[in-house]
Amino acid sequence: MPAFVSFRDPIRPGRAFVFPGQGAQTVGMGKDLYDEFATAREIYQQADDILGFPLSRICFEGPEQELQQTRNAQPAIAVTSLALLSVALEHSPQLAERPAYVAGHSLGEYSALVAAGALPFDEAIRLLRTRGELMQTAGERNPGTMAAVLGLDIADCEEVCREAGAEICNINAPGQIVIGGRREAVVRALDYAKARGAAKVIPLSVSGAFHSSLMRPAADGMVHPVATAEILDPQVPVVANCTATPVTSETAVRHELVDQVCRPVQWSDTVEFLGNQGVETFIEFGPGRVLTAIIKRMLRKANCINVNGASSVRIEL
Image (tube, rainbow, N blue to C red; front, side):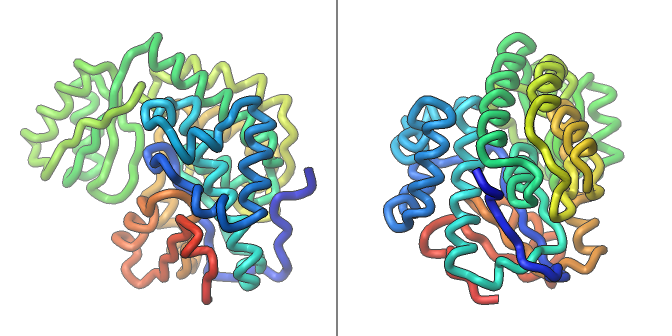
């Protein structure tokens, strides 16, 4: 397959593309896009052929329980995000100017790497199916859960996790942190967080403690698939989940794709980094609008554009 995206030079300063992660999925996502645009149909059909089963049907029709399975949700979100990107590029020519950065939350990093020309579409979909299966299996063998803690800073959350035996999994925004670990540890941590003044704690319905040490078997399982995958140097800097700094070489990409399975997602630092680099326009491609909401909260002057369906693919910049 040729490069999924071919950007025009020069770089368009002040612009970043971002892609959501697990939790953004919803039954029916991408159906309007598939019905209206031939490019989207081709992308979904190609994903079905790569995987050998009708992922498109799961996206469009569910059932919800099947879509929510980690092994299905991960490739489904990526295919939908990349279909939205591809159609938007066709109908919004200004988007073809090379963005300054791309970034993705958790599995969204795979979509970002495809957009950056570092990961062929077919490799991304196969790797995400493997990643999802490994993470789902790790969650079954090492049962755990996750919860959002609102209104505590990172230092307090770290102390709560140390006391309870839990771990920080996602730092999404200041005062918006996701913790994880074994169920009893997370329950203790939420009690401690409330005692320390957390504004709200929200148990999450997930199949495992993603981005924690309980996912180490999944990270180990990704070593060989990532090592043997076709990966290129990114055409656009990809701000990494683990470090919130750009990766620009295929070697760095390979390390990131293994490490990010069991290390915290540094999304708050990613947004802060992009803001400090002068990014003013953020375009989110994918179901939902979770990243758009976080970015608007953190960077109040940012221009945030959400591309999540057929009605939003024509963009005026």
